[in-house]
Figure 1 (cartoon, one colour):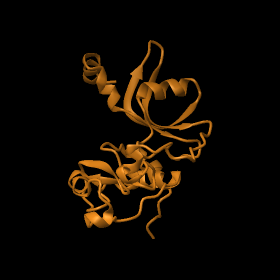
Figure 2 (cartoon, helix red, strand yellow):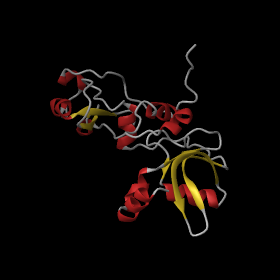
Figure 3 (tube, one colour):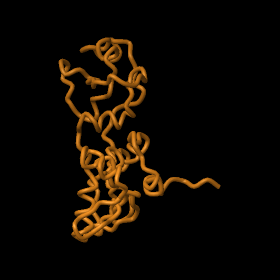
Figure 4 (spheres, one colour):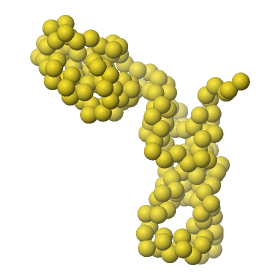
Length: 194
């Protein structure tokens, strides 16, 4: 480790937090795409020493203990396969992910809330089949009216997504930081150019 980096680390411990490790399942697929399955470098190093993961790729920076010097892991793969969940939790985030982070009435992105297609005042329930992502203006316009009365249409009908469908949807929204060593593992099952 060069002296400048070491001095910077001593002054600011968050510097090495900028080196997350991509966590892959035993089949070399990420545990999740959105949010991307990442561990801080400390957890990745600890898991490697406990022989729970194999280190597949590394950063150029090192960490030191009194007796050991190792490169910081950038990609680790679990030794034991973790079975993906089949059931998709009904959360605001998963709802937005299902709807592609856009309003299901006008297609706008950003400033999203959710809307009951059949209003709760009319007996509508909070479920996958009755709730959609909506921008604030569309949500206010619709209010507690039916779609027909509000003169609005859905871009696509709401339904409960499959776990694999949400995982694939998450791949379309990469995080702000993608290390070059992760690319082969994030999109390894995408179609190759001929």
